[in-house]
Image (cartoon, rainbow, N blue to C red; front, side, top):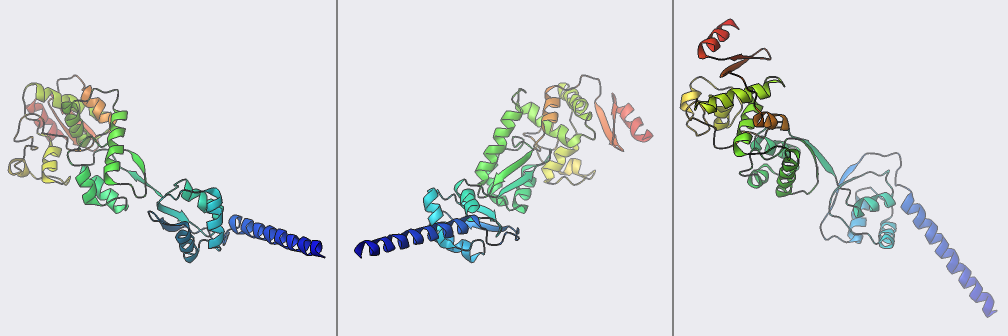
Length: 304
């Protein structure tokens, strides 16, 4: 009789264990709603517990069983990675646990075109809610010209200092085959803002190099725009009224620093300017007209 009771108890325990196992398997590998693919932003805070996380997932409508989440997390011995994630009710607990344990956080794809100044980059980062503008401006202070224009993927929670480091590291990598000097980078930044067509870079770099070689004023409009703090068109009076070391209508030589963050093509052009006898140019209908003398330049202006 005792053996029968023990056998019955054993079978009950086995049945309960099997039933629990099947329940957990179904709870872990069956999504709450496999037809709902709408992803919700979900934040995993720093130093949160698995229990708190499971309750939050349940309250957000992402999982059915907090208990299954906790048990599965314990079995997998996951290390919670803080950050912003995107989960949907069509995702299983197993998938959610894997994403959190591997730190598969939301990434922001940010594109910085060539020729942006740091303030414009800060505006883009803030508009895409990556970091605050003022934080980036503080981290990037003194780095104009060294933040390489490119498309980046920034993970959520990234700091402004980390972004600046990533962009500077990219600059070092992309310019590794160019002997970068302050002169080259400053000239490249001016060329970047002056180009009208791709093949202009080397020629325009040559014009400014010719002027520098004879100590002739560069008279580059973008330097005045930089001094004003805007890329809006300048007026005739700006040439004389914008008092700044960046105004190359008033100051000989290159400005004190880069006026934007140039791309590799402009940097290479500044490092290897075309050799010619042009000292003047202007843009007209997508074309660049070059001149050797001021009289020729004036005639071309009248002609076009």
